[in-house]
Length: 213
Image (cartoon, rainbow, N blue to C red; front, side, top):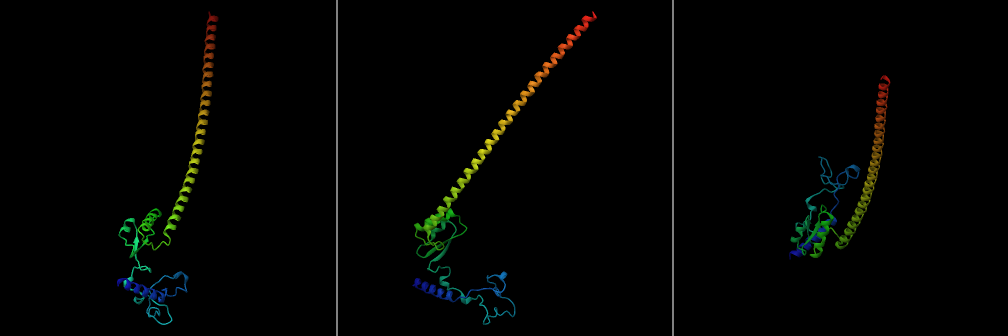
């Protein structure tokens, strides 16, 4: 009996929705910056607020859906918003349908869709769940491939940088060694010269002493 009344209420809602006008704000068509979003008409002589003929319709209680089917989908299933996997346990697939929240990441979404397929729960915001899973898996695999490629390129660049740095270090080391050798040779030459000058001075001293005697 309840199912029959629900179906009747759904039919009534469908009929009401077909007659329901699109509620647009006053003068929205005149000024683009106002947009099409709804705003309550205000003003003492406002014809839209006074519901005068020939003016746009305002939002009123008479346009609302029947209370029996409030929060129901057009298929007759109760809409349940899913924000985490644990909420799927309390869903009844016969009377309820799920809407997966947009804040959930792709990996968690795939898990939720897989569990929903297993439990034969209808997903209201995904038309073909199996195709959705394959599409996302392909996207993720492509993303992974691109990541791996970029990682390889990065590693190659780092290796090249390290190689260049090593070569530079070796060059600097060689240059330092050569400089050290040159300085050592110079110091040896200097010492040799100094010793020679000392010897000559001593010889001169001895000759002077001999001549004096």
